[in-house]
Image (tube, rainbow, N blue to C red):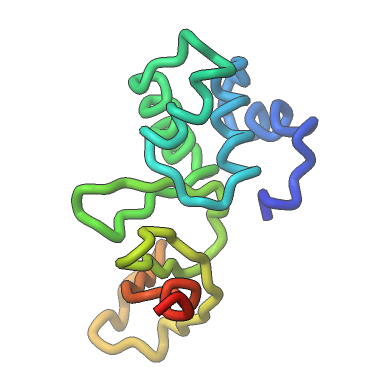
Amino acid sequence: MKSKMNIDSLGEYLKDNGVKPSYQRLKIFEYLVQNKNHPTVDTIHRSLLPHIPTLSKTTVYNTLSLFIEKGITQLITIEENEGRYDADVESHGHFKCLECSNVYDFEFEIKDSGVSGIEGFKVDERHLYFKGVCKDCLSRK
């Protein structure tokens, strides 16, 4: 899992996955690995801009698109108008709190044999999303 990856080895990891490790790409991937906040392009851009003043939103977006193409990042689309990014590409689900807007990871296992209507299909991806109110927001009420 990427969260256990040593930050010093990120450049090698990017190279191993067909990504030329420029400084901006390294910093964007480092942000994703270190921050489990399922950020948007704007969140990443705002966070890195003080450290990389020349960083554009277009560069962040294009870099994330490259990471998705290479299979080292996934796009989470719980809301139609909001793309969030996750460097954990292992199969897991996401829960979005409708009050604080945080997105949380959770583990699940779905057996394809337990799903009807797709017999004979080849399943390449599984996505499971829930929306509601997180336990922190519930405890504040």
